[in-house]
Amino acid sequence: MSNKFKGLGGMNMSKLLKQAQEVQKKAAEVQENLKNIEIEASVGGEAIKIKGNCGYEVKEVEIKPEVLEDTDMLKELLITAFNEYMYRVKERVDAEMKSVTGGMNIPNF
Image (tube, rainbow, N blue to C red; front, side):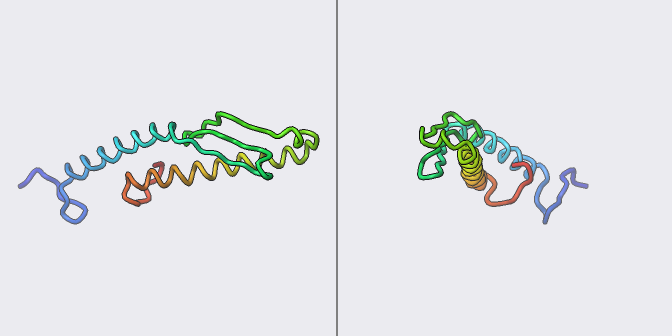
């Protein structure tokens, strides 16, 4: 009797595990590289700009002086700008991770 377990359509289990480890290694590299990809979001005709990286680290917030006079508008613009930044980061992270996983939807990746 062979000591190699055949599963998933006859694929050798050790080969499958090796491939999973390679994907995990590539994913870790991509996650590290994401910190070097800059993302910018602006709202209100560039009244508010958020700059950061794809590691979800905000590096800079620019606010035009005329927006400071209306605190309600300032709050709304800040919320919108941060949400836009987060959306753009997620979009880029998803695209980068798809290149590693071959488009497979792997939870927590």
